[in-house]
Amino acid sequence: MPKTQADAPECFVDLNLDQIVDAVTAGRAEYDLKPFFHVSLHDADAVRFRHEVFQDLEDTRVFEHIVDFANRMRQMRKQLETAEKLRYRYQKERLFLDAASTYCEAVSILLDNLSDAKLHSRGFRAFRNFLEGHIGSNDFIALKDKIAKLYDSLSAVHYCMHIKGGRISVRKAAAEIDYSAEVERSFEKFRRGAVESHLCDIPDYLEMNHIEAAVVDMVAKLYPETFDALDTFFQKHPDFADSRIIGFDREVQFYLSWIEYMRRFATAELPFCYPDVSPSDKAIHSIESFDLALAAKLLTEKAPIVCNDFLLKGPERIFVVTGPNQGGKTTFARMFGQLHFLASLGCPVPGKEARLFLFDRLFTHFEKEEDVANLRGKLEDDLIRIHQVLEQATPGSVVIMNEIFTSTTLHDALFLGRKVMERIMALDLIAVCVTFVDELASLSDKTVSLTSMVDPDNPARRTFKVIRRPADGRSHAMAIARLHGLAYADLKERLKP
Image (cartoon, one colour):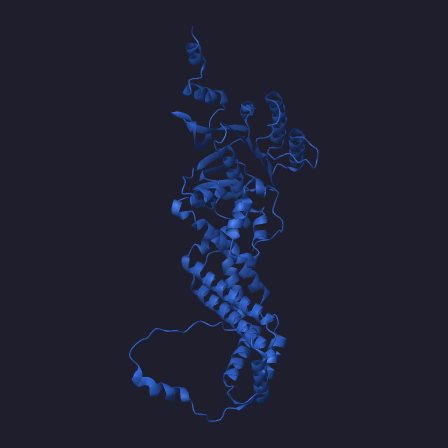
């Protein structure tokens, strides 16, 4: 099952993964799920293990069985939390007994449901085998037996109260007459069909007041064996729930939460797939993928969502993305990073099909505002941060750079960019470089030029499609100039005497 890490990786904010995880885990604070989304897997078989679990949960019946189990376990936790807050001994112990009963029921029903299910994943089949052993164990059988006997004993407790003035006395019930049935019979002749109900729901466990608690104490003296047994059960079974069951209840939410998040995109017919992953093969591709954080925002705005493809083959390692501002370059870079990180979690990823690299670390270098506290200029800060990235990166890393060296001249940006790219190529890293420097797109056979496209009939309108194409920033500028009548020929004609 998933490992955890409390702090989010440094790349989270740059890739908007923090927004995605916030949305996925919303409403599940009790499970503390975010740490599960912070730890990447580095073994392809571990990724496939999680894929198998997700695929079992695609079966609606299996999904509903797990949700039912989770609801029962949530009820158990609420009972325990309420019991912890109660002041009066026997009320606390009775609610604790109810929690233990809820636990036994949840586990038993889950096994019954999973026994009938067609499970294929190693994870669920192993857990079902564990459940069979757990429920068949002497400890679990003894726990259920004690609970059943206590319920039988408590249901046999009958007493009468005698109230006179400010005094209350209690005795065991004898052969008392039940007047409720006789009253109903007497008023039966006045019944004129169904009437509006004025019943209201009252919480099951309002805390007793001191008078009620005193009455229960008196009743306990009338039935000492029953209440001693209740007390003993409370003392001897503080941790009645098996830690592995508790762990499963939390960890399976990792899968449920992601499945429910993916369902939000079904209305827009946006695809998800199980990516092939490899820690060694750097031939990667994706078809019809999209930026998940942006897509979630656009769905609420009922705006169109643009999907993009990518492919690296042979010696190719680096996407160099150029094109007009606000054309989808940064979105492409974020999509690329999201796909790789989510694939490393073993989650289905946005797209019809994908083969992705299972990295050891994922680094990002996105433009940041100057920090007045460190007294460094923007260029110096860019250089220091990219140096730190390249010092830590290995041939198994992925690096995503967005608009680096924008604070310097084109000449200096080309010089520095070439040095960074040479280091990336020497390490044989998979990388994305979003840049305004067209020359970086054709440095070697390891670089692939991608360009964000515009409408050919209206160069001012972005299509947000990013395709393989040689970098040519000048042609875009010329198209806009011609659109507005500002090309050289237009100006020359206009300025004729």
